[in-house]
Structures are given as structure tokens and as C-alpha cells.
Image (cartoon, rainbow, N blue to C red; front, side, top):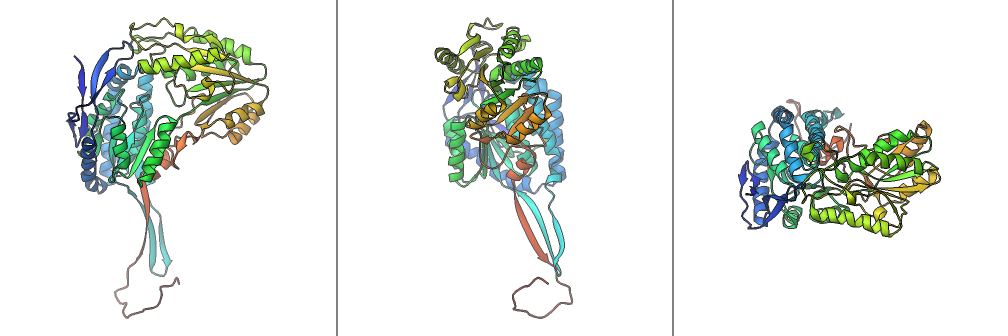
Length: 497
């Protein structure tokens, strides 16, 4: 018997009324585990109406009371994170340890949001003009939308909604229909933490729900994470309808390895960053650029390590789980086929993996393609799977040019023991997040997350100070309180004095 996964509107579960549903599968078995409701425009409208109705009260709730709810949510999440991790593993497929790590990284943003009152402080100038004071405040936008992807069903929504809620907004979350239960679980946790009904709502759905959120006149901003073509569509559609939009797109993250690097450290990092979560990370290292003569040695070390990884059911203590759907698994395998046909050397072949999991699971093991060129689809396209491609260059300058010529600018890393080379790289590389001997340079919550070029549409990155500014707008107030003894009329133009 499959589970029916409803919406969450105005503080309660709301059964789907559109008559449309989608299968939710267990990627390790291939079995259908649930049916998620796909919202109609009317159901999206109901969620937005709930958020709009709740906004005035939540906006005017004191920062002290808002922070208390945030702290309670954080404490409940910390106590029950194994529950949420198990849900993520069952619907996404990533191993339990990785799912726990995802929840912990999301929790960091909730902890950051607990201190948002400090970032909402305005400025004050006494006697800017004689008897005139000027001060600034930051105020919430209103109902906001968050549209999140399948690869991080807990962490990515938590990049946005704790900051949005802490700053006084109300939220409508549209999670991926592939793994929707985590969002519903978090909605129930918010209610237990004391969040008023209507402040946090969840509508499941497909393009119908997305388009309605992008067009709805009550929605003030949209936060999105997904592939670049969809991110561009979300940005263009949302801004055309007068909304603030931060749309984080795709990536092709390069790892530049210089000849002086510790090759064991670099090989460990390439395997960890390339195959964690089956490569379904926007910050995964998918491209390794070997400089000088280190390519053969480095690839051999990577291949040796990749061969030790155990692929299988994430609940069995395996190193890497399945891909999220059968269609996605076949798409990724197709890229491996295309790379081999184009002349790349398949050093480690994940198509031949013998998994520790169900026969119907969506399996593809760690895969390494060497001697890849920049015209091959395995290099040009974001594959979003456990496929690491290796390119060779002769010099640092050639490697830098290769990275800077790529259309994406999400994350990158350099491995070297030369401090001067690292400092030069961090200055010259045209990428938003840079790691030095760190393969996945995801910033802490009090910094902001986001890339450059076709990896970001919009001006604001996620969480951190930029997130606070995205979910608020500034207001400047100029005031004069007249002395009681003042009298008389003056029709002249006000002047500074």
C-alpha cells in the first residue's frame, strides 16, 4: 500500500484536490513508496492566501518572539535529525551519513537565523539637520516562494526559509515531487515549534505549481535552485511579474591539481567530492584538471580508491547510494556511453557495478573518464551523477583559462602546496566559491552561497547577509519633533542648517 503525501496549508495537512498525483519511489529498490499530490492553480492560490493572511500578524510579531520560535525549531530539529535523514535516504537514495550531514548543514542556517535581529538593526543619525533625525529600518517583503530541487530536500529549502521567516515573511515552499516528504515533516516541526498557522506552507506539484507561484500577484520574491535552463526560466518569468528572484543554476566544478600538490590528498578529495551523494550535488567536483605530468599518477590513485567504494542501499552502510530515478540513471549512463564513443578512456566503469541493493534499484557506480576534451558532452554538460572527467593541461595558465572559459562559475578548487599559486588562483578565477585544498567549498551559513555566470540569475546569493537583504527592503525615516514653544508659519523651502 502506497502512502498519500498531501500539501500543508494554513497549519494543517490538505489532501490533494486536483486529481493529479506522481509516483515517489525508493531508489534502492525501484518500488513505488508513495503518491504525491500535484497542486492545481487553485491549491497554490489557497497556500498563498494563507501566507498573505498570516503576514500582518507575523510581520508585527516582536523579534524576541520570532527568535524564540526559531530557537525551538532548531532544538527540535537537532533532537530528531535521524528521523529526517531516514526520510531523505528512503526517497532520494543518498546514504544515511550523507543525509545526516545534509540536515546538519541546513540546521546551520536555522542557527544563523536565530541571530538575525542583529542584522536587522538600522542606523540612526541625530541632528542630521537642526532638530531633524534620520534613521533606517529593514522590513519584510510579504509572502515569498521557495522552489527547491530533489538533491537536497532538506538543506536547500533551509538555505532560504529560516531567514525568510526570521525576517518576518511568510513562506510557500514547493519541494521536488521526487522526494517531497521531508518538506511535510519540516512543516509539522514548525507547527510544534510554535510557528503561527499560515506562516509556512507546502504545496507539491510540477510546472503548474511553479508557474502559478511565479505569476501570483501576492508572491513578493522567489528563491530557486535547479538546472540552468530552468533557473533562467524562473528568473525571467518571475522578474517579468515584478518579483525579486534569486535563481541558483547548474555547475561544472573544476578541481585544478598543480604538480607540487600532495597527490594522495588530491585523490582522496576528488573521490569524496566526485562521488558523494552519487554526484548529485551542485558543488560536486565533476572535472579534474591535471597540470603538467601528474595526470597518470593522479588518475591511478583515484581509480584505486574508487574501486574500493561500495555502492548500494544507503541503509546498509554503503559508501554511495543509487541515483534518484531510473530516468536520471539512464541519462547519466548515456553520457558515459557518449564519452567513450567520443574517445575518452573509461578508467573506472560504473555501468558494471554490482550493487548491495535491490535488483530494481537505480544503480550506477563511480565512473572515471580520462583524456577528455572540451568538446565532449561529458565535459560541456552538467551530468549530475557519479562521473568524474579528467582533462590534461601543461601549465597553470592553461588550466585557469579552461576554467574561466566555462559557462558555469559555481564552485572550484585548487590543490597545491604553493601559497603564491593559491593566492593568484583565488584572485584570477572567475567562480563564486573557491576552495584551496578544499574540494567542496560550501560556505558556512553566516557567509552567502552562490556562483557566477550561468550558475546564478539575480543579484543575491543564498543565506548570510545577502539572504537577509534579499528577504527585506530598506526604509529611511526623517523626523522632526517640534519644540512645544515653536509657533508661526514658514512657507519657505526646508533647508539644512
